Length: 322
Length: 312
Image (cartoon, rainbow over all chains, first blue to last red; front, side, top):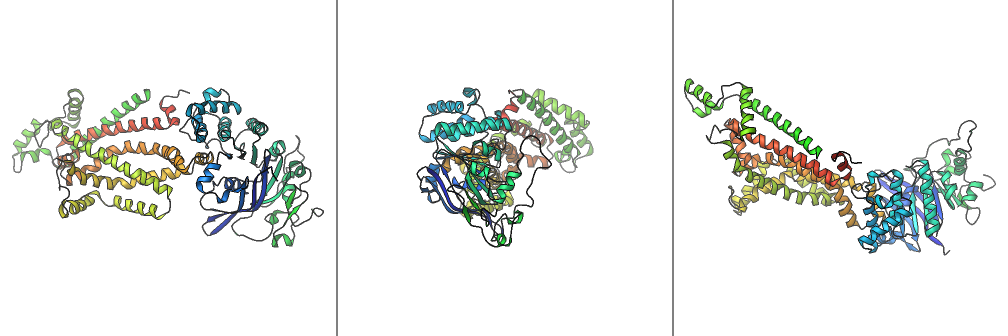
């Protein structure tokens, strides 16, 4: 496939902790195409951020990454430190969950954006012009003045715009957005999302959107992957997933979404808790909360089943049975 | 500006409080300078005579008011009981000696400790980190007079590379400064290390890496710059401490600084000299603290606003 930009193959990530390894991500494979918005959904701690950070090789030193992460055919895992530095920002940009602390408080925001621009050998003055242009692109009010503002003089939404401007300043082909709107209120969230989808249209930037918000996925994403406890349980086109979710977890998740304005009774919840990932056991990681779990679920790892060229899920039960 | 004035006024109040406390403590101390001045076996009349001559028979508050008046209005710190000289003449020539020692020590100490602390943070949990931290801890735990004596034995007696005591050439300063630097090294190193580790955990460091900055650029422009905020404040706040820390080292190396004078004066109950020295050190403390605050404002834009009185 030619329009494939990023491909993760059997990626497992373990954290070395006292007393062994913590399996944060297990055997995850997916790809992101050029110019699409690919969403990764899952609850807190399911490993979605870990996957995102592993692509940029920004994980802590105690993380061990297995498998391959290929960007445009090059395995990012095999690059030297110097080479991966060249990929960061230039090929892949990344924005983080909390814009409040992802900017350095002692420099003006413009200077921090300019710092990124100047990595491509652009003069300081040219850089400033570009910063103002970028601020306009992300719809920063009063762009000329805001470049001189310090992070603490800006609201969360503005800071996230700065982050987007910074990460797009070097025209990467892929932008990883790690819960970009979690820390923001709903109106700002809508604006940020609009900027992201507009950038996709204008510059053809592919976006890997990490979120726990299904509403957001429905709104902007082209394809979606659902993660649970470090495993990728289902992925496919947004329409496929929303129309016919296959994995029990996805289905329960969908049921847990508030719909419409009036609720009948209580909102559905998923019983039980996420398993501790310390002890590596065989079997499906969702088994202890799954309403249809059978003996086999606790004993064997489920294989990945393909429903169509795009839609796959990881469960012991065939489509009819589910 | 308003902030500085406010701080200065507060500082003046503080200095007066400190001087009063010291004054009363000296007053309450057992023994009297008079007996020391008169010499052993002096008659009671002679003692009273001297007491009257120096005004020591007056009540504490009157004495204090008189002293404060002399200091503030006439810039007169009184007369040393021991040397029978104006206090200021005694102190004046010792200030540059002490300042030179402490400033050079501070410069060397920070020039060594900050890079070492940063290296320890970057190479956390490696052999280098552990060795450096343990060595510096040992250096600090050992009292400075012991280090001084060791240095003297090693480099002034056994090898004779440096003179044993005195202060006439630069060579005289090498050993006392080394002793001073060694005793303060660990504090600064630990501070730098923990501060750098804190900064390394910040999200904006991740941002800096994510936009494609090289390791060294991140370390200099972001980690060092942000750790420096606390370190600079520490520099200014530690200056007065350094001076008091030098009291013993000055005594050992027979350097005529403020510290040496302070000890002899306390032993001789030379009230006016002790008063004057503590007065100077407290003024210096106040000034250094204000400078530290201003420095903080200069380095951290978030604090600039609160110091400037809130321009936003």
